[in-house]
Amino acid sequence: MRIGAFWTVVALSCAATFIMLELPYVNWARVAAPVDAQPLIIRRDAKGDGRFGASRSGGRSHRGVDLAAPLESPVRAIRSGRVLEVGSDRGLGQYVALGHGWRLQSLYAHLKTIAVKEGARVKQGEVVGVVGKTGNARHPWITPHVHLEIWRDGAPVNPEAVGLAFAGVAAGAIAERRAGDSADASDTGGE
Ligand SMILES: [Zn+2]
Image (cartoon, rainbow, N blue to C red; front, side):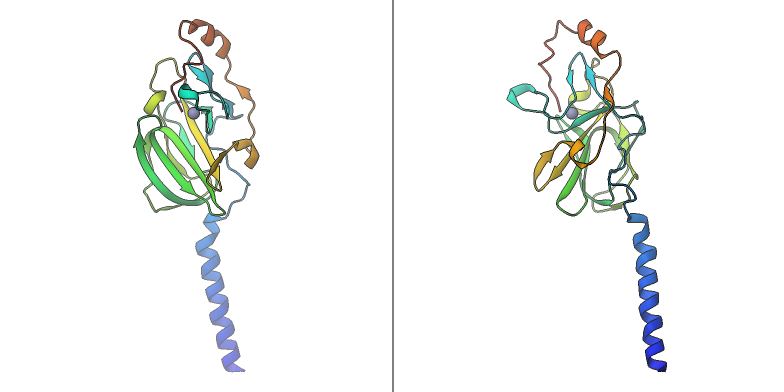
């Protein structure tokens, strides 16, 4: 009886420790908003269209969505996970890639600064960096945004498929587009 009670206490304290350690990494929502600007607005400016699948130079299509947000505003993990990669790329600029398990990954690009290290665990909603204009978002006509990609089973998916909802395109976009008409709007460098 005593031995049974001992092992019950051991099991309960192991369970309690596990819960304490894992509680911060519970996803309380299916996806957390990657930027604080609400509602989420898709970038649309003289240099391009930030919707998933929009055309890009070289016959490519946009692998993510561009979410308009003020420069230096926080960029947040859509789900808890681990930092797979922190890097710098000609197109993406400074970026962070997260692995969320279940073969789900997310990538945040054009960041000004990065707040996490490779291999670190992150919580849902945790700040991974701040909005910047690095990579091919540096053009002055391009409105500040975070380029968000979501990958499932090794292929990019429309973020709407995992539950992100967008209110539409950035206000004033049409006027900006007219102003920039000298540049072919389809000539979007860019990610
Ligand atoms: Zn983009």
